Length: 332
Image 1 (cartoon, rainbow, N blue to C red):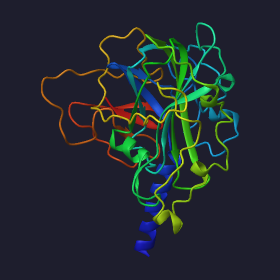
Image 2 (image 1 turned 180 degrees about the horizontal axis):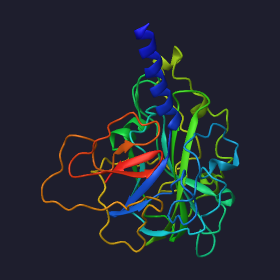
Image 3 (image 1 turned 120 degrees about the vertical axis):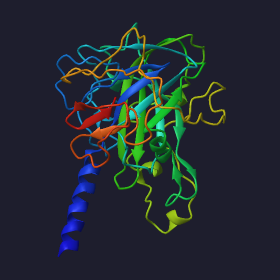
């Protein structure tokens, strides 16, 4: 009786944690930190480089109009844009610890017409893929996936803006696709960038797609079953979407740039447009200390609470567990 009750309780915790899911909550560029949109807070007064989105739930239909940026395609009322140089890395951070370790990681860009992406609907843009990683080693059933690498990197993924991308205003779209259940679970979010010091290699027509339209519900990369007998020996996974954009000629077979493992991000000391949470009772502060942080407890920028959270709640010294919203607290 006790064992059965314990099993039910444990199952409830697991289901609740997975059901919470999540998305990209923040970004770092050149040591500067940018908060993302807070989907479960009021949109009133929110300012972010990230496009608004409203749900931690996955998208499980490749034909829905929210597939571009996990929203209706519009920008926020107080939308921000930040600058990045071609050749510079940008890191996206998911809620921690990201619960889905089987699936690919993908990054797209879409250039906006005119002088800004603000006011431009994401569903009208042409997207090209600048980074992809899928099954890194082993078999589909038991191998190492890019999503697991993302989790190992503090639930983060780093993409370098190609040096050949033309200067202009862009949306960047980070996406992870979870394959542990069917239909596959897609988690895309977007942010607004102004790319400077760019090159001259415009994407070819064969490299451009729309969202929705880039994927089909019958794509092998979305219908793969990890639990079949074939998956025990199959070592080939087809990443969905268009051919990878590279700085070589269109269609050249240059290898994709792998996400780089980096140390945890540093809160910016200078930024033209720093973004802070809009509904927290006290904004997070940066603590300076010559002593190294404690190695016990949840790491800096790790998740330490929120509805459905079943992980650690005590932050490593000198960090404090700060409520970002009802679903996410972070060690800051």
